[in-house]
Length: 579
Image (cartoon, rainbow, N blue to C red; front, side, top):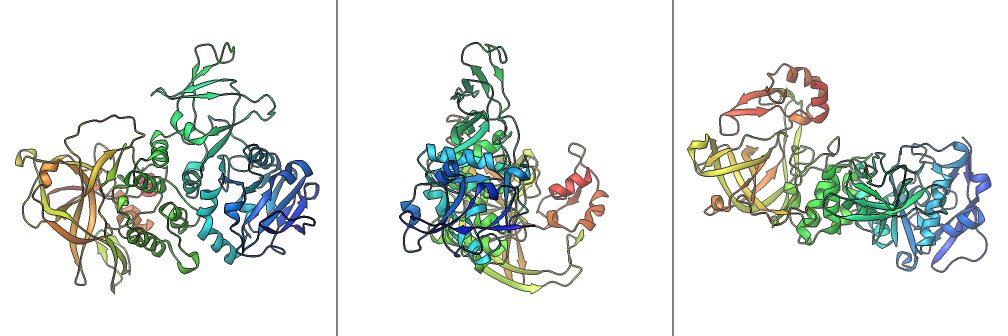
């Protein structure tokens, strides 16, 4: 592999910038490019769009450290997926040394991005592939620590949902919304535009709720490329009606039902992202952020934390954390110290708590589903993070005698809160007037709706964590609800003299049920670790009896303080293997 090093730029240096380096496109195409010999670590860098489009020069300018360049320089930033749908021919693309595992950068795609940046008044463009010193740990840590500032202060973010190897049609599915970093790249910028090929002519995209988006072809664009406002594209939804302007033999005067999957084919994902963009209060916005984050994945697990910290106004130094768990607890500790609330408590309805994260869960959900609900957690509790260290367990310890988890050390931070909390027992419907309408259980499947009554200290408690409120973007109107109070179903247990509570589920109840509940302080710990069991235990799970309705394995249990069944808690990979 031949690496083509950049050469130093000569001539006038723009105000606020320190130096530049470049390649002529005639030499750069088909090559692997590197800035490592000339670049200075911990500096901002930007591509010169005019030089690229007019002079056939790929020129990168480096900032002057004494100047707040992000406030001075008009620039756009690109949002894309590291590995996209299309692969550009080597002869018309660039690779970057240290980032060869990602797609090659297509010349035409990058040129169109530069052209649109110039059109909206941004003569400079930020792309991580060119503007970070790839393979340089010090520079990459600094860039990650400050990356939220790039998207918060850019004139616009240009979304390439199919990657930097080619443009996508609006009906083609991409992985862009499933990527962790694209969340802040959507929510922080002032303007966000999404590139898509469009060949249906002028017309209007109409959502079932009446929202209409006009689309106009550009006659001078030989790529058939259209830059959609991303917030408008979210409102259009995955299945809009397209009404052409005037007669069109290919489409028909009556219009067609169109598949618009380029952002996501899932209405729930679009709703959560739209809610985060249009939220009217902090609880609504942060609840939506947590749910959006849980639908996404990152190549490095710790990036689940770094990719969202800027959305909460938090800056962590990546050199200080070795794993996701430590970084996640530091993030939440900073949020709480800044006066934030525990909006993450109702962020997931179909996933147990990760034992590696204790009371948090930043694990992505394979397939992109966290919730299809149109409500969020309002008036969430505040609290603090506490550290608990317990002795290592001996090898052979098993949960409920079913799974041998091997030796483990129970150390970590836990969320401590003071809320109304009461012991409960589940009985038949005739047993009480107090209704528990359960949304989910910690095992990923709903508990049967039943009745509850207060019956002293039992295995399960209900802790009030907030109110159910509808997203302003959900278009459900003001629906009167009997059950508006959100409670966590938690089970107390003692570990080496420390009283902890694990989360076993969540329910929505009537305000009348909690009127006389006393306030209590407790620490929320991790859920039983079944979904993260070793794969060799899968055969044991397969031997369990199956539920007739769902086909999932289950076993009889009284461990939650009531007689009934519980799910085995297979993770998504386990369920697929089981099927």
